[in-house]
Image 1 (cartoon, rainbow over the protein chains, first blue to last red):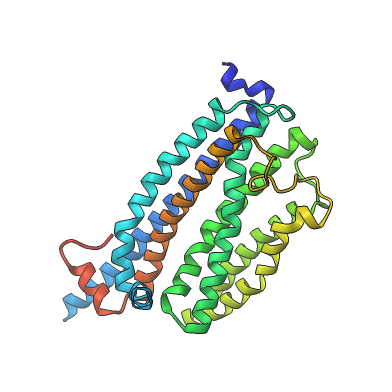
Image 2: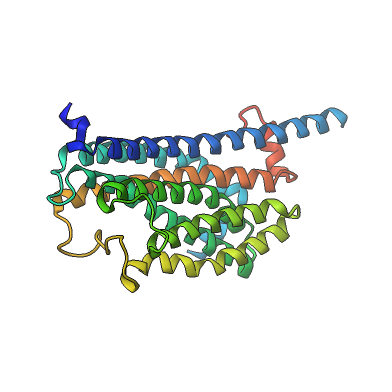
Amino acid sequence: MDGLAMGGYGAYVWSCYGLTFVIVVFLNWRGRLRQKRVYREIEVRLKALEDRE
Amino acid sequence: MWKWFHQLASPPHFYRISLLIAPWLGVSGLILVAYGAWQGLFVVPMDYQQGDAFRIIYVHVPSAYLSMMAYMIMATSGAIGLIWRIKLSHAVAAAAAPIGAGFTFLALCTGSIWGRPMWGTWWEWGDPRMMSELILLFLYFGYMALRSSIDDTTKADKASAVLALVGIVNVVIVHFSVEWWSSLHQGQTVFKKGTMDADMRIPLFIMLIGFTLLFGSMLLRRIRTEVLYRERRTRWVREMILSPKGGT
């Protein structure tokens, strides 16, 4: 429990580490999401073109 | 050397190379960050003045450093795109902006949280380091807003590159603000001799390397997306996407 209390600064220390985790995960997730969207968009367009041809 | 550089600047070549490198950067970055965070939180002795609150340094300094590095990457690639008209460089600039904004936001938040117990305030409007870092965040927002407001990609690339170049002045101010003006924020610590014990400094370097690798992995993924979008009408994208293996 002492490790978690951080000498009375626990709320400050853990909130910083928690926020860092959230931001890094968020940035990673957004990057993946955009990549999937762009890929899917191009795939749909290309398949439609191929069908027309 | 130049041949290699030109080869790397070719979108299909870069796409394939980054596909191989990004996962390695991500995994090694994660391992280093996990090890550095464990050291910083539980192994390193507490500071004699700040107590355990000083452990915030292990997330605050890497995020502040990345906030400036991402901007420099964005501005330098923008300049390369403007001068040498290398298509890939504008994609790099566009990809660096959201990650840089994220780390700038993180640096501001962790700095503010650290400031509360140490300075007795969450925020100080007159502080040059805090204000210049806040301006950096607005520069990122402005850059992204400018890009998305112009439909023509070539025009958007040029306009945003100019904005990024002008904003370099602010990065210099962020870096030197603690030396040029009196500030609540402490002066240079990481690379100054005698300011930090080796026991505390080594985990910080591990975190800096780990964060940089994670940043590199995220940046490569976003550049790949940018390249894919910009090259969507080219033959190599068509062949790659319609091939049974795909290309993500």
